[in-house]
Image 1 (cartoon, rainbow, N blue to C red):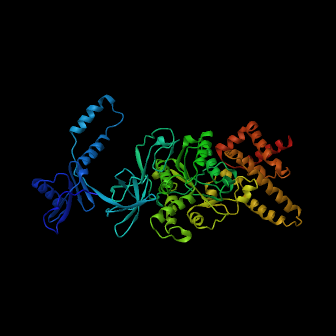
Image 2: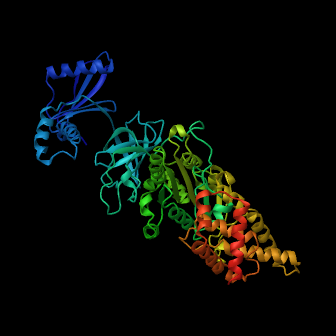
Image 3: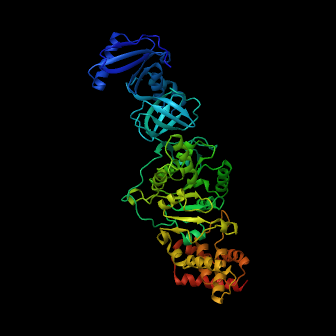
Length: 591
């Protein structure tokens, strides 16, 4: 509180502009006259009404308040402005010249008559502060508290009270603490040196790699590209996972949801896809939201072991972080991806996972005293994810032609894809890959349910050779699942149905992949063509996977020209198909 040892001194008319002056030594008449001239011109007022109060914290000079605007002409205010001027001295200057540079800076220093809006804290707790006094503050604006903690305005009320989520420890923020506007929205410092690094949602490095040398500041909230600024999704983003690349292709600029129960391999699909981008000129951003630190460390170790960190940025907001940091984490990751996309690069971003993100937002909303809606989530939770995922796009050539492909991850409870958050995100994305617990525990990895999974981009995002080679595999697998359920009743099956069951069981074996072992395009094509030619039908189910691996090694060692042609030409022809089948038959016969 301000210690008042003056009787309030009021100069002027009572209906005039009210100006409060905080100081130790009150201004004399000439100073008051100059101040009056300044405020009459600045606010177009008829008269000025001065209220003079004593405040020992001012030390020297004046701190002046006009409503919620503050002119800090105190000694501390001068020091703040001088400190800002020092920040313009670049690091690359010769250290021996620093003293002379500082001297020149001090000699040329001029105090600016600039002002800033100042508010005060009404209440604080649980990472939320309610503030008053900042009547012109905007939604999403960053405000700065006296102790140095930053916050973001997330609630604006008619009575002038604003709710702020805090990005730091609130132990030094008290009722009555001073808070000022920055007139900036939340952003993240960024540069090309961020590749291979682990950062928090505020852009601060959390690994041991030192400063990232950021030279740009990119907003975490950004408008999604419009229709004219986009072009159709037509280039494949190969995951290296045969079941996905063949049946549910993902294109550059697409949004494909990965959904399933806990511990069904969702993150593994994401990390395999990142590993498969090595050498393909794709930058990857992995956003960990509310994960255990051990889980994040495991992902980092996996990527490092496969030399995939060189093209990857990890934005880490573990479960130990506050709800406010978990809330902004996916937007911060999206800002990193957008930075590279608008520079013409292709980017893959993984949000792991948006279920925990929705929970973090629900926590903030309840603390901000918003009424919950369906399933206790606030009514704007749909907008929460739509404004995030709509930023993924394939940009037009006029806007650099870069792309951002999003793979959001959502966790279901007991396979319920009709729950509130899953249905919201399914309606925003361009398809989903549904991982089934039953398949996972039966040993099918990845445990993709072909009936509930879909890609709305489809063959538009496939290479010519993949589109022609995949044939009717998805339909065959769907029929196999139906026949498998029917066969459990113990009825007699004719020869055709028995063959279909055996063929389907073989396909399921061929689609199995070990973790962190993405398949190249040539291996995928050889597997698909040989499978549809029936070359694995008469092989015992348990031996199919080992024979597949032997066959692919045989092609790589003895028929590298075929593999090279598939990888580089990417064109399908009957000649290529016959060549693959004939070579595979010779291998089978020679076993």
